[in-house]
Length: 267
Image (cartoon, rainbow, N blue to C red):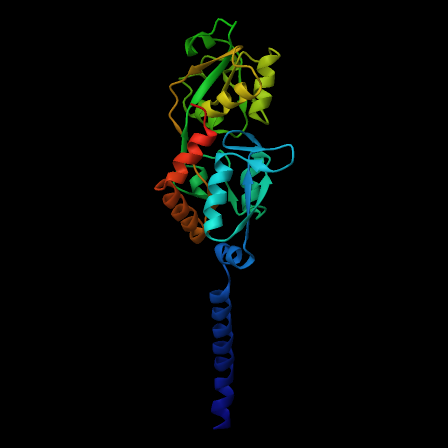
């Protein structure tokens, strides 16, 4: 009898170990559960993309995206810790856990969707070509051998690369001169380093008005597809993204969404 008990001991220990391990796995909290417990979420954003997102002189963020997120997470009684991001390193910040979400002017594509979870789109944008009024550029065809600039890691750069027949194949060096911020591209345009900037239309309209430049530049429409902006999370944070999508759906079916759109977007 003692011999039988002795032989059974290793199996008993293995059973106990597996049970404890399984319990450990089951009790591990996901991102949403941690957020619910701490009542705080960290969201990364682009500090230079009004009217969607921008950083005030006081350091506080503002914009359409900011207002949307604040409304959604207030309904869950959760406070947002906003973190401005280096836009060319936003994916790294998400992957390494510096932020729980990216709620900047971010777009989904096939490459990103392999490693990133995106929400339903919450806003669509259009790309325009910003040119000085005195320049003899009236349409995209006039951009032959002219220098075009834009923001690195932006939707504008993605579409410029994905649809080379529209602009890339005819511009100077067949490339886009890249800048850290969209405002840097406009500054380069002002000093003559480039002849045009490919930018989001809402951003461009807001920038020109805020800097009293409307009379000096033309915005040319482009045939690029519309840009669909979405919220980004880590691939396994499905419960968190469910909460984001639920919040967006509630807002979009209420008068609040229309009110925020009218508040932030110029007609």
